[in-house]
Image (cartoon, rainbow, N blue to C red; front, side):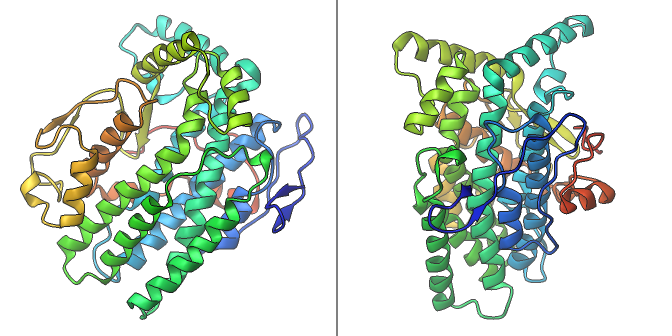
Length: 401
């Protein structure tokens, strides 16, 4: 049995036979906490077949999309919606799927400025790299995607239930956070097959959800928008701290040994100096050529510079538009080039500080992008995913605009 020690358990699924499509428990809409658990809990990513990994990834992507819409509606309370963390997580999860899918070309490799025949060779080599050590790289991604979705999904689903009604008092907030903390305590007892990393600082998650709550009770639309952005960045900090161990495997040259470290110490960091150096070099190469985020209308290369929109389309740029003290403090903490219109990209995605700098400015640049609320899958494919069925021909990663 795989599940919560002393709590909820689910049967471990049987291996998928050749030619037999994977199956998963169905869930209904609107997405609730039970639906989040149905998406996250079954299976063991270190032993599952690739189709099983693909199915869960796409269901996680779909789940983030549903939470994104529900959370935006609760916060907006009838006003204009702005992107929340789950909105961006939808497209991040879908981008992760391109690494898990053996027939997909990771988006970062599509942008290589080289002739097509060279690109084919590079893609072929990278696929061999991703599949080595029993696919340690994409299995680490699958483990991280599942656990982070469970944590954020449960906390987010309880937020939606708590504040969908008229009671948005301080006492109601206190009751919500006690409930969310209890759920996180339960998740902290996950057993070994979940491959958990070292726990992240829960205060980051508290501050993120508090920003969302303050946004939900704000009467001024500009203040609400800025509080949502602050919450997005705080939640990203929690998620990226939690993801550090998984990324240490994904970006390691000796990914099999890094996976062993993750399983035994909850950190993928290798012990010896030469191996750590090899990971740093590998991380820089993979960051430069292999890491990108596919949004509905563009592919964002996370190693390249980002330009803040100067045409007024970004509601939180330039700096003098930021009037909410909470957001100003968050930007000062994570933006490593304050005031600059052009923000530098990441040199190494292994660095928490560099990831947070890029993510903070990515969130800021796309804060007013309504296309982020596009559905990640066609209706027919979403219906199949909710029923627990994988359509292997669906969800190829192409921008829709």
